[in-house]
Amino acid sequence: MCRVVDLQQAVLAKNDLGARRLREELAARGTIAVNLLSSPGSGKTALLEGELTAARERGVPVAALTADLATENDARRLARSGVPVKQVLTDGLCHLEAEMLAGQLDGWLPEGTRLLFVENVGNLVCPASYELGESLRVALASVTEGEDKPLKYPTAFGLANLVVVTKTDIAEAVGFDEAAFRANVQQVNPGVEVLLTSVRGGVGRGELLERALAVHAGEPVHVPVMARRPAQTPLHEHDHEHEHEHEHGHEHEHGHPHPALHL
Image 1: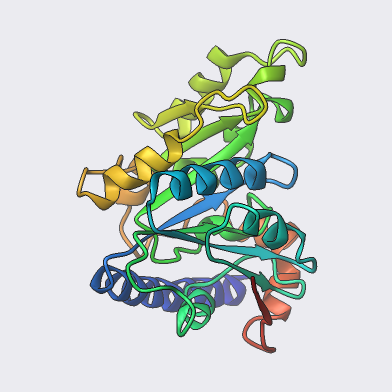
Image 2: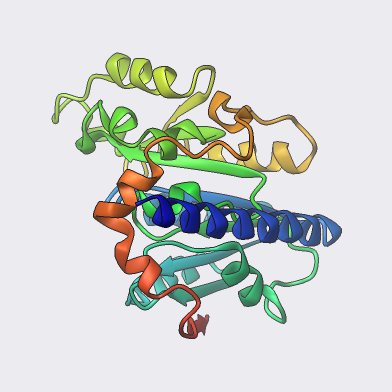
């Protein structure tokens, strides 16, 4: 078990280095990355489609890279917004890594892009410990997932700079307790902002874009308490999560190409 943990820490350390390099490369281009994490079915793609459309309507140069295990459906959907979109098929890998992202940007990311939205693989465990050189990390949860989602996935929500709740138009119908959810978020990530959205109801449309543009303009982001831990300190439940949900990802680590679809 100790050897497994050591290997995991080495992989994360290598990824952290790649993430720092990628962040510097993006900064040199005048771009910041926004990393979106959620479980499958949270409404992440629908929210992102709306934000990309809002950006195009306002003339804000943005692009999106979406990762999925096998299908290209999300990229086709996001491409309807009219902004540059690229699909990364992870072929079973349950998260993106910084080097994978960097390899997809060469020759594709348009010059002058201000914001690069990265829709991570739908999973709140595997992607949580992997930085992608982002300047804004957003953890999303829908009202149908329950108020205790932040407690169940403390790394995903604890390392977020912003938390977004989706599908709020059906909150009453599903008995969503907003106060309890906010309390649970604050328990794992004190001080982080919680943004309420509803694509169907038009609530919060463009708000994520506004937050990202503010960060691009230099506005400080919320720094999670968890992110202040010494680099050598293991991320709490990380090794436990790998035992149950991340084994497949290690089997594929850098062992095969990750095809991409340009749209």
